[in-house]
Length: 471
Image (cartoon, rainbow, N blue to C red; front, side, top):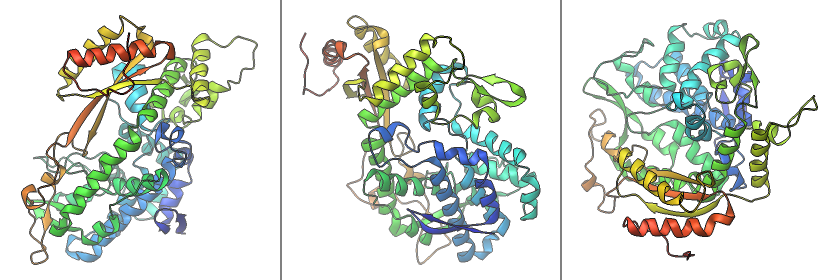
């Protein structure tokens, strides 16, 4: 039977029986124990929501958009099977998140396992989805509800981690041809970033953070249409909605600036990352075939990865030891870092400055230069240099330049809207990078601040003058 969920964001929502069966598995239920905003909960008391409810919301919205297009444009031949696959992709798109969400793949993994530094949670989502289907014998259930396997499993995974939809050659293997290319833009839109994943987390994160959300995703769904563009079909918006879409990307930028990349949030996340690095080879998880894997290797075995959630910090804080052996020093150091978080003895913010260039080589040169100066006054393991990126979701590009629109008079013809026709008040630059320094030992804070400000002055970078340190 279908099941009704009472969601704080979308109200009472009904999900089909197959989605309920997926939800009622250990692989999906683990998302209850992974915070949506990572370390943000330590800064924003309301940000207690988890990947579990976000995933349910995305599954629901994916179905709403697919069904709206099916009703408005029957000529698209969207089948019930297509809709069900889109819903499953939305529901399962975040199965691969590790402890504290993006902290795990964005901060911990590149340092703990440099050989897989480019590994992302989407990669694990595909593996976890396969594991979920196999471990819970859901293949037969999926066929009972009308899916064709393995074709539809491939299609679902292609929507979770899609290629860019305007690639010259059509490489999808899920038997949806170019006339259904728009289906790949619903859950994770690589064309312009306008997708139901963002619709849900904008609304949900703003609700829990206490930040106003100016974007109305229901209005977007109501005005969405599919049009043909050079042989590919894209989801398009009404021309009058262009300003609202700029507001959507501004909301994304604002959430990053005010919450996700908040100075204290990043301080907490660096501390959690440091604790996980120290505990990496001392917290072991059982995987398939009786193997045991450390934190950084658990991602290679979905049976082990299923057991890896935010609760790992409880294992570090309160280790269960049946023997009288002393706690290994690295694990004791990890516990001390986490206890500092609990007692609000956080890494101190030294300062920040906006970088003038976005080239990765130039940024590395700047970081190396600053590090060479800092090590003269403070131990290397007592500070951290990090670079924060704030953008509209497509690096330094305007996402509206890859967005198509239609008019009321001609709803079948897609076109792009030049920015000068929208407003003269639009941003000129769509990305900036901020270099930040954190001090891990308050005794060294004053020296670190003076060194950082001197370095900024010598390299013609602007920094804050307040609390200026003196030697």
